Image 1 (cartoon, rainbow, N blue to C red):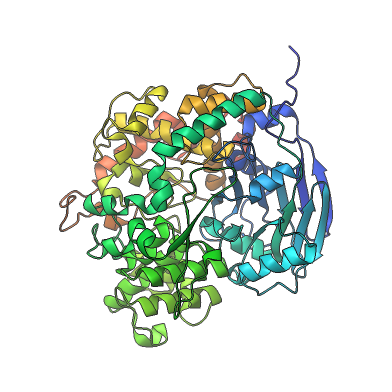
Image 2: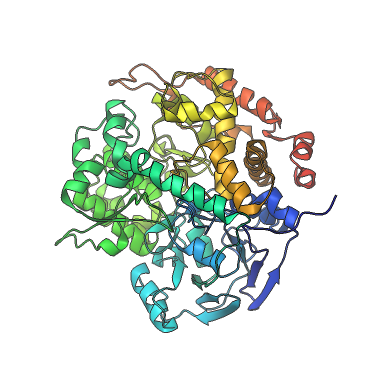
Length: 628
């Protein structure tokens, strides 16, 4: 049988930039490489396992920072603007990756590149300029230290083109804040895992891209048909997202007792009505932003006058930000939350991590573990908006007590001592996102087994599959046929969890937005139309499962074991009030579900890592040599 030849969805070129010796090179993997790894998470895992030695310093020159699109990125269909980035995480010491929407990923693909591998370390600040197939390493000393909006405008002015797309870190990444992220187009963030600190450690301030080529498509007519269908479906299915963004359901989470409040001590917040997407739309919202070719327009752009002075160029708070700086900190001041969002955007910080760190600090202060002498005079009390805004900027600048929290809550707790670790809501060193698992318990299992630590983007939300609603109807194409209670952790729920999470991992490889109003089979049809492959839903699930296995091997190699697949002890205790009163996540039930998940995944139940046989079944038997 003839070898597969390139048809569409990828360019066949990967850019490698060594900042230590300023060497730029091009690699052209064989076609089957793309069908195996697709892009995003799986492609990043391939290179990190192959090329990064175990035990290296995440902030040293031996770490590699990899940007990778997927076969969907940059095609003329909504929800195709996403891109991935990965490295060894300076926050957890294990696997680190994130995805972002916007326009930069599509621009990279249009410039002719599927991925960029950044290695080494520059002696002086630099940025990379990619203009189609021309690549330069340029001096960035004039923008080093600038806020992100000022830096982007300076780069565009220097290059004489306002259409240049920029991915960059801010001053927090320069200062190696372990919760620093990378942004592109100012308001789109690869927020988690501290990848911004990795980029800062390499003295790489930005990657500017301009592309002029369309992504090749195997079946343009079929792609166009799917694009038109998505636009029509989105008018109805995504209306809530268009009107109110990701925070459309904040009120429902509060009603269900699963809105993280006061550092996960409670599940309901008395001031929730003041921080909803609906309240934002009525007050400070001035525009709805979007991503490449997307009709949904879920991004928020807000404006607030003095004394907050919030610029809509920095976008606006998403759900995670509203909850992390709002209910989690007992704060119902929407304008202050918008200001915290801008500070994080301007300095390049992940809002989930920073909001968590501040909530952690407030609880430590409330319990007497911290005093005014520790905090530099800040009165860290629930709902103190001024203190929350001040501390956000202190973290960004590594000033005073902010320098302690800039290390993340796990390291901060270890420094504070006095039992503070019990109030650090983190898994493997990464803070929990704004989703309470005591009212959707498989989500807690997802936190435990996540390769990045606390994460919701490759996880399940039990509420989606507890009744006959669209997500439940859609997942039947995976053979999951019956709704299950949000409190269920039976083998049936673990099976549902595994299949859905494998699908989520595929989405992070194919880089299709998780808000795309497309069914599973429709995504498979789209991939086939783009690439020309005779693909199937089975194949796509295997891509996700393969990526998850490789990330698990990476973490095992870095010393993570079954004991690290745990959630904060607080989540095993019940709320004192609300709909989930007296419903903790049971220890024994949780551990049984964990064992069941390992067995269903083909993982060793003691080592919590894929067996050699499982890796062979996934077509990556080479990874078995990384397990020692």
